[in-house]
Amino acid sequence: MEAVLCIFGFASTEPNFDEQTVTTMKQFAELLQRFPKMKLQIVGHGQPGAPEPLASNLAKRRAKNVADEFKRSHGLTSDRMLLTHCSNRQPRFSDSEKNRRVELSIVSGNSGVTAKRAGKCVLRSRVGLGVA
Image (cartoon, rainbow, N blue to C red; front, side, top):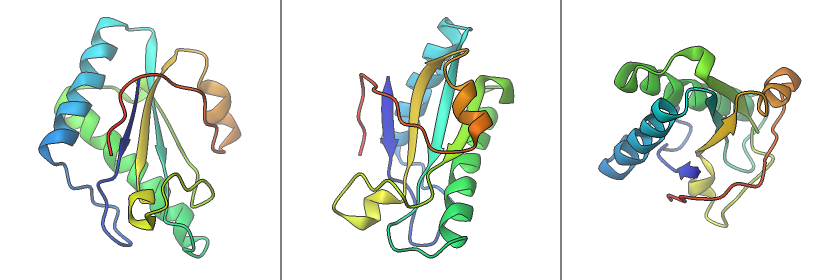
C-alpha cells in the first residue's frame, strides 16, 4: 500500500490535512492495527531546485510532522514508523509544487531498517493506493 501526500505549501513544513488526506492516513493506521509486525515508512521530499541544506531540512520536518499526526490522531508509536527523506533528489511530478510531498508505504518489520540506518532515500516497488 502506498500513498503520496502533496499537502505542503511553498517552503512549508506544516501539512494541510484535507479530508482525503485524513481518510488516507486512517486507512494506513487501520492496516497497521491489523498487522502489528508491519511498519509505516514515511519519506519526506522537497521541491526540485531548493538549495541544500534547506531542502533536506524541509523534507525531514515534513516527514516528522506527518509522523507526529499519526501519533496524535491514530496512536501509532514511534517504533512502528521509519522516517527518512530524499531532500529534492527524486522529483516525481512535472508540477514542482506536488514534489513538496510525503510518501507513505507499508513495509515488513525488517525491510525498512536498512533504509533508516543508511539515512538515505530508498524507494521500493509498491502496490496500492496513490493519492495526489
